[in-house]
Length: 206
Image (cartoon, rainbow, N blue to C red; front, side, top):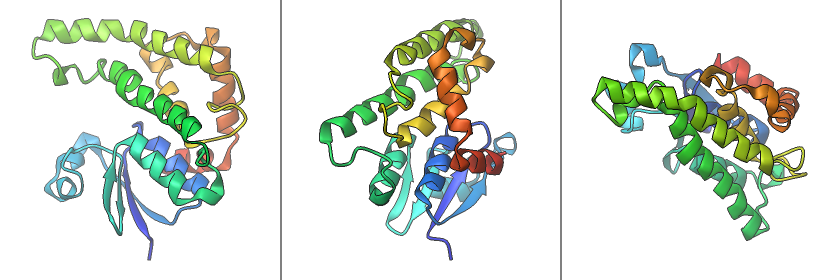
């Protein structure tokens, strides 16, 4: 019997947690929700996650949601896999800072493209938000491009932040951002694509 149950949906930020689970070698059951069929709003799923979003991870201690929290939990639960600088509080905080930026700024900028109704009822306002997405996503990407000074987000050490960056940066082209001028981000993506955990998670997510 699997230890955990992981809820995901294709083309969402849940891929970051999916990658981390495989990097950690965690034992879990995968449940894919169909957002087009509104499964995330079903009574059954809302009992798991009242937010009606993914990711969600059911453990023996309870349910965890929100990508930064899940990534930190996995890294701490499997310390032997060295998926975070657990022995250095400052470096760990830096990793959390990076993950929080992806969650609170870059993901939100991306969401303005299709989820404008979360912030405004006026169709004109929603269209204005949509038009802004290439600019705001570009600004986020350029900031990260300047920060990347090693093969991984945290320099020489691969961490759960890399799977998160891989996931969010994978949306750039769809948001009309020209990634040809972001060589470090592209190199990071190429390195990630070579990792077996990434390949497995991407194949399973669909």
